[in-house]
Image 1: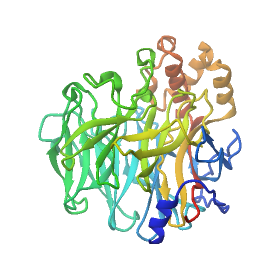
Image 2: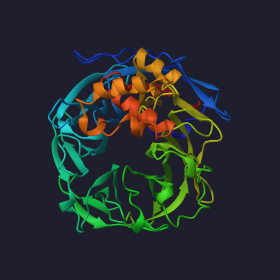
Image 3: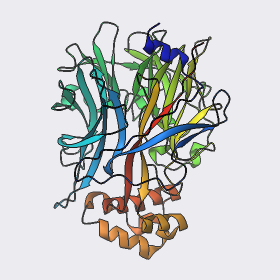
Image 4: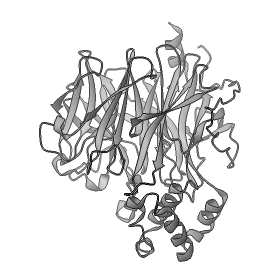
Length: 483
C-alpha cells in the first residue's frame, strides 16, 4: 500500500503535533487582524464520539484585510495555491465597484505564504481547479462591477498553463447558450467525465441548465443540455448548478452538492433524507437561509435527481475531501446561527452507507474549524475547502468577519439601530458606492428584520473599510496509527 493510500485509510483519531510557522506577507500588505475571540490553537469537536473533544490546530493569517472567500489547490509541483478576492469601491461618477483575484502561494504545506494581486483577473468567488498541468479558475461578475456586461451576471473562466503566474480569460456569456437566457452562472468546480473530457456546469435559471464540455483542458467549451428531475425545475428561478460542487465517490458514483432555495423548489419530496427541520416561513429573505442538497447522476452528468440533503439551514460552500474507506470529510460554512451552531466553518464525516445513502453526520464528531465571527456581526464568507496533504495533515482556508472597535461596539449593543447613527454612516458611504447604498435609507431600514438591518449597516461600514472579511488558514490533523 503506497503512502498516500495509507494516509487516506488511516485517517480518524490520533492527533499529530503540527509545527509552528510564520506568515510571510506580501510587501505593503497589512497582516490580517489577530484573533480576539478565544483560543486560536484549538478546534472544538461537538458531540465527540470517535474524536477527542478538542483538536490542536495552528491558525495563520494570510494577506491583508478584506480577503474574502478563499479556496485552495495543490499544484503538480507540490506548491499550495490559494485564491480569494478583494472588493474595491471606486469613486466614480456612477459609484461603481470592482473585484479582482488575489493569489497566495506556499511551498511548505501552508506554514508561510506570499501574496500577489491580479488586477487583470476580475470576478468574485474565484475557485481553483487543477486539470492535469492546467489551472482553471471559475468566477462570476455582478452588474455593479466595472468589468461587467451591463445589466447581467456572467460566468468567467481564467486559464493558466504555468501554475497561475500568467492567465488568459474567457466569458461564458448568454450568446454561448442555445436558448434565450438573461444571465450565466457556473458551478464552483470542474469534473472529469468517464471519457476523459471535463464538465463545467452553467445554470441560467428556470430549467435552463447546461454542462459545458471541454476536450482540450479548458481551451474551448461546448454546451450540452442537462435535465433535472425530482421537483419543478422549469419554475425554479435558480439552478442546482449555480455554485454547485461535483464529486465522485470511491464506488464511482457522480454526485453534486447543490445550493438550493427550498422555498422555491415546488414539488420536492419533503421526505427527502436529511432535509432540515426549520420554519422557513418566518426566516429572513436573505439568501443565507439556503440549504445543500446532494444530487446524483447515473448517466455521466446528463441528468440529475435529488438523493439526500445536509440537515442544516444556512449550510453553504461545501467541499469534499476523500479520507478513504468510503468516508469523506465534508467542510461547509454556516452562514446563519441555527441548530445550536454559530456562524462559522465546520467539518463532519460524510459516508456512503451500505444501503447506498450518502449521509452527512452532524450529530457526532462535528468539527468546529472556525467560529471567529462574533454572533452579532454577519457572515464573513467562510468558504474554504479542506485538503489532505502528503504528510497526512489537513489544511482549511476560510474568511471571517471583523470590525474596528467603534463598529463592533455599535453592533454588540444595538446602537447601529439608532436613526442618527445609522444615517451618519449611510451618508458617509453614499459617495463611494452610490448604486448599492442609495436605496438603503432609514425609512427602508426600519421595515427590515434584524438580519437584514445588520446586513445594511455593515454593508455601509464595509464600503468605508471599517469592517469586512479577513482570510486565514487552519493547519490540523486526524491521523490513526497503522493497524
